[in-house]
Image (cartoon, rainbow, N blue to C red; front, side):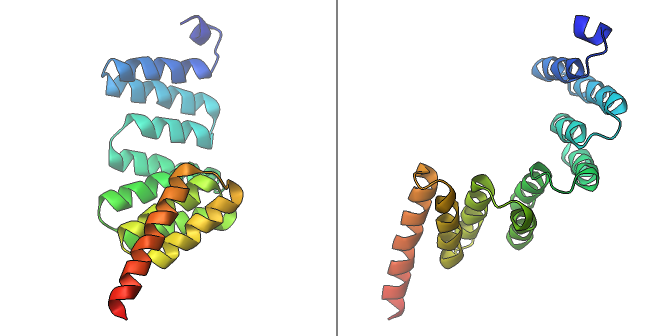
Length: 161
């Protein structure tokens, strides 16, 4: 409350988190709305508020965040996860590919590899794992996913021959 009194914008985020932990979702959302009003179209504030509302409102906030700053990757990851939940795998992969096009990072590549794996596109899974491993060669989850996909691909090729 002292931080709010001195008009520190991060105080709204902290208070929203407290409301969220108390299962006061509307109060958390309202607090983040105050942050957005003070932040003056800050993409980060819209991202944060998306954590305190229903899926449709979150999609709207993340769309605004992308309009304000198209190079932020969080909205792309979130939208991809929602699409996967809705069993729209191809659209989810396309959403991640948009972000990877301007910021190929380990998390995005690993996530897209996992999405490819879920639809059985093992060659694409392995390709994305290898790209991710160029960034961090010892990343355990990616090493495991690549190994599993390579084994499944060999099994598939053996069956087909």
